[in-house]
Length: 435
Image (spheres, rainbow, N blue to C red):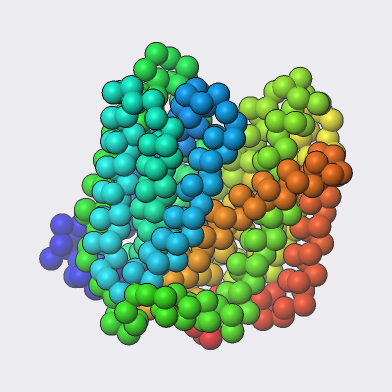
């Protein structure tokens, strides 16, 4: 018997034997599917993830603001993203390999504790007035490594605690909670960092909120590997890439995301466009995509009922590209925000299906490595998109870089999606796991 309702260990790992159907009528068709919340381990994960994500956004904003306040250099602010990228790549891949070999609960708890301790060190340096940019950058690099491992493991845990038919709904809930944090976190950070000792407040609140995530990790049941994965190392990482390369459904799920982020991520152009068109009102541009994703998640009860996930994922990214292109041409702030919000809604849909395909198509002994590659793509893609957008804008102007990238994304993904028939025809009801 367990503390979560008396189910056996196996039942805890695979979710309840029976989960109530969603309510009938309008709610069943449109409202977010909350059935996964009836599973205690997942419910705690969502609560812990939601609160900790708000806190992590406080740190994500406080760090560059503190670096600029110490250095008065945008170049050194740019180093914040750079020093975090390499650990994200290395430890995202290696953390995924570890998740296929070690107990996922233990690994997730250890990496979460490591990230929490780094937050406490950020709090300590701010409170002590250390005023050292190199020290902050070093802590960011270490925290990025822990974050990469925790993220890879967390994605591999979901299919072990939630029934397969509820994985899309679970991912919708997770992404929606994350988007809520993307909206609330910057608003709270904007208030805190402008106050005296504001950096200490931001890091301190992050540390407090993260304790719920630690509690959720601690209360997870044991999630041991199935014993069929090789020892974690370079060979096992390469085996993960090889597994993806010969499976068009998995390969395409990564490729379309890279195309979407590299060609149609306009974030780096927001300051310039806001200054040129919208009298410097950059805040609504940064918030619009997250708000659209949040609203789509809250009304996304239908997402989990779609079987043709490959085709729907392709269409969602095409809509993302077209909405981004339209926003790049808009000279009215409300119209640009509306189109960015619609793009955010499409991005939420595509994110749910990409994550769901990875979690359900691959066998359990490969899920950690798949999530490792996923973390590298979702964190590295937007950074490459920022580089592409900025470099293109310096040659062609902001409008051509922004709108042109959206058009290229939509056209490229549609053509490739239609040509790769196994991906376009991918049906959750008939595929064989791992085929």
